[in-house]
Length: 173
Image (cartoon, rainbow, N blue to C red):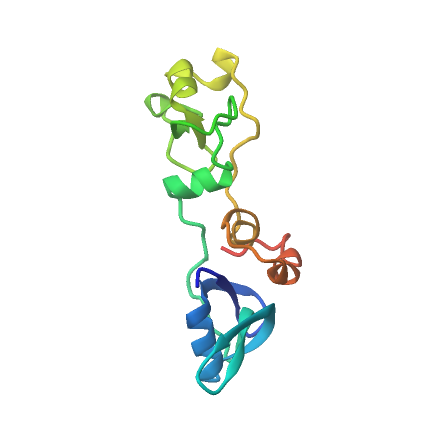
């Protein structure tokens, strides 16, 4: 089973994404309750049939002592940018580009990294996009955890949307 399940904290705030097997185990052990199920899909045993969970809510509040951030990785930058070069929309030979080049003090941060194809990255070189007349399709940004789950994780189900849309303004980090 390749489906993913949204795990909510006791206060209905998004906490994580897990496998169907893990979510079913949480529900079966009464550590979580089934909040939304996938229609017309079932888990079958020899004697029982169970609905496939789409969203589960933990029965106990989990205090997250650290701020929940989306980890800055190459793949997460690609996801944020839709696996497209931000200069020409190509989907081939993708790499990362520092908007402000590292040689000029640019850091590897969410707001300074964008997806670029090798051709555009070489054309831009050691200049800023404005100096070369190359404008990115959109400014790089740091996605919140909820926005990343909803828009960029690749696993979003319709059943998740009520729990993710209400928290757009609150950045969970």
